Image 1 (cartoon, rainbow, N blue to C red):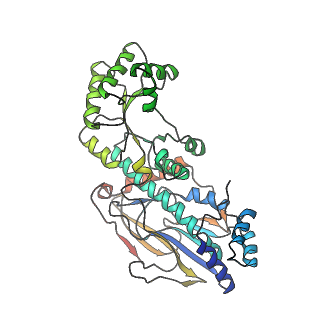
Image 2: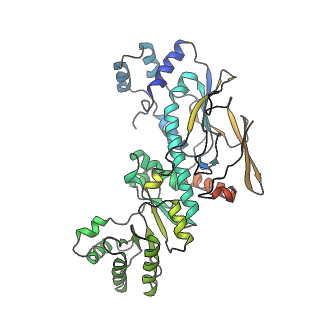
Image 3: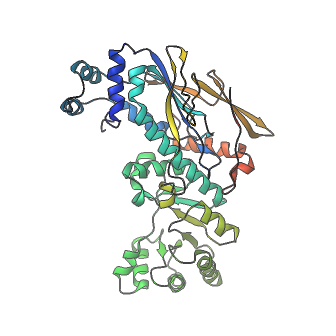
Length: 419
């Protein structure tokens, strides 16, 4: 697997060299947290610990890495020797994946020699930020779906191939049925789904000919794309096939007035006795579309969601920070206006009322809260949970989330007390 050591910013290495020269190699604690939840979010979903631990296994400076760093003519020979022998050996305290979290809560804390944990800043922010961002967005889709099937279609417009993988993983954790992404299916054992593209229909002289060719090749799993020319005519051609005894599992609508078209297509199928045919909708879909269509009774069975989810289009970033909170047992905090931090390693104590989350307290670390010691001296203390187990954790969390925090449009502040 590709070395991840250079997935960092230059100043992480320059600081590490200067730390060592200044004799600052004592034990430090850095904390990763979101300063403020975006205005269109009421909660976040912790995600990314699994990908981070995979990346840390490969955080080693290769011969080629060191030759490149030497060519910059910035670093001293002894520091390059230090990097050559670098091996992750710190402790990680983290909120398990799938848990619901809020502002100013430590998602992840790293404790170890100062130069070592400083070097990890960029990698940690990148992986936890993006995975948490996408899990939080896809969780909203799950809330909007009312139990309908959701499929991740986002790879082609994800911001990079890794982004597509992480998006499929995060959305599966938060309730999606699967993904169109075959690499994610292989790597994470996520169920895979797919239909056809408009190009397939356009290759044939007649739309019906395209449908017949596809069903012939996939007689037990054909979902037909019916909006290439005229959606209702496409639906009628699907009916013609089914009258002949040909199996059609579903049809997909990718454009137009989805609410109206889904009703009319459903009526066409129901009148002919094909009420079991599923209606799939895709094309720029997000949680607000899903909620609106379903609130109006649109008979949609499956949603293919992609671009707006894997880019978190309405809120494309979190104000996330990785800050020093403790050095050699002494508290460290930042007082910059608007960017204040808290001192010491921390724990999240969650309080409940009537079975629902009531408020959280962020206190100096002790056992028994949301934050767990997952890695000691660079080694996992236990095997990380499977995606299925993380998904179950998320589902349990949703049951405890107050109904008002599930609102997709109304901003509700959850109380977090910094002790």
